[in-house]
Length: 85
Image 1 (cartoon, rainbow, N blue to C red):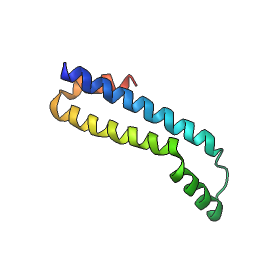
Image 2: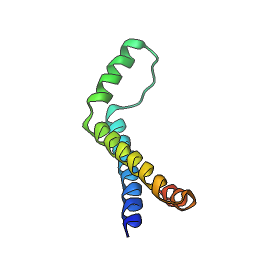
Image 3: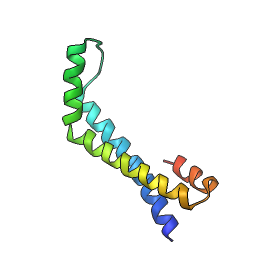
């Protein structure tokens, strides 16, 4: 039962992290410049966007759950389930 909970949370956190990052980047807008000043401005907007911060937090939690899963479970069991996300 613990395996199912850990793997379910892992997949959910991956999905939520990607959705939140996508939502945050849509708010930032299209990146179409290589001007260093504009890229620094863009970077500051990215680092202060709450949706991007939340997405990164979900993905960090997902990574920690993934590490816990592969340390305790068979890799041939974990990989197919995580790839479903």
